[in-house]
Length: 94
Image (cartoon, rainbow, N blue to C red; front, side, top):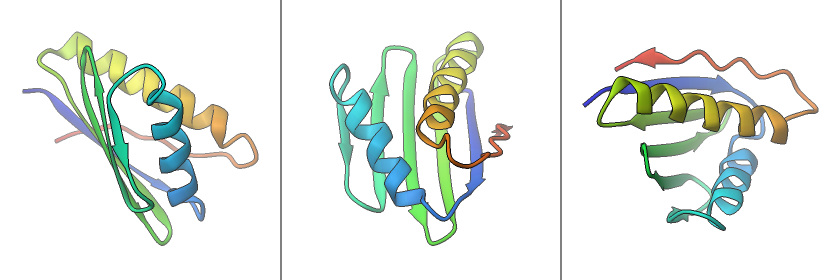
């Protein structure tokens, strides 16, 4: 199963994790607490983990097209929520 990971340096990892999960939770299954989250999209899943200075994102999808879409959706929403800082989101295959 294709998967990717991004390690996003930020002082607000827990805040962004919770914002993403609350936002998507209105439309899709989402579970989360202050340190970890899980989103289930039609095209795959995203697992989130907040560390003191890092937000870890991991995507899995049945196919490459779904993985690409998942990366775009998660990254675009994260950038929108983090408009006060310039985040660097580099997806790497896992």
